[in-house]
Image (cartoon, rainbow, N blue to C red; front, side, top):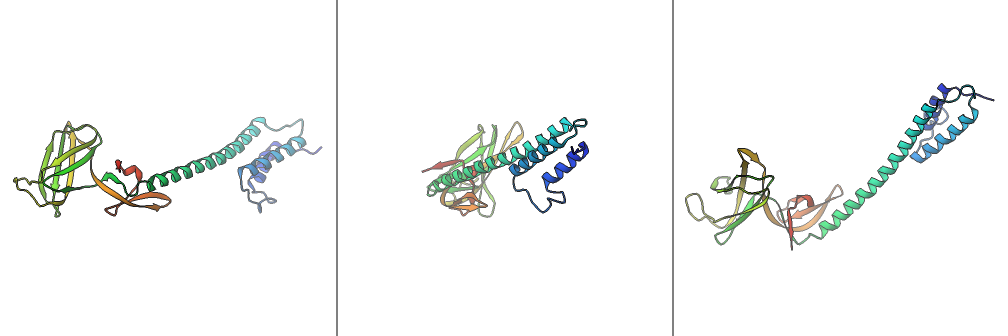
Length: 228
């Protein structure tokens, strides 16, 4: 009966499984299933040829079998994750297409003055006890600062009456806004929001992006509200 020493068991078997031995270097493994089948075949051959007085190390054999199972399990997990990701992208694409022609609220620092009034919105990341909204012209000069009493976390609405700091009514049109907020002296993140219409859907790196009336592109996760 031929014998195979334990030291040769680990090196020889792993070389053949991994395709690094001189007889198998020209063949590349293409899947964990093939690696597992080759491992079991080699293991069976070596167990049949082992020396009864010097058997294989059970702990070493168990560890190697565990490694093979891990490789197979990871390959199946990766395949499952890919299917889930493809399904998610497909679902996002359909949702994005359904938004074409509708109006959405997303981040934007513009406010429109018409008929002497200009409604505005912003989003607070946390409760704030003090909020200031600067109305600025096209040159970035502050026309007026609205001091609000604060608000709870979430969307907060306000209205500008179209007058500057001296009480003069300014011309109708689009103006810029800057929002700052704080709570007990600590800064609170405040994001100005603006209404847009969705004109199209573009795909960037396989991901759907809404094309807004301003020409900007945003993802669905950047949209705060969708209306008909």
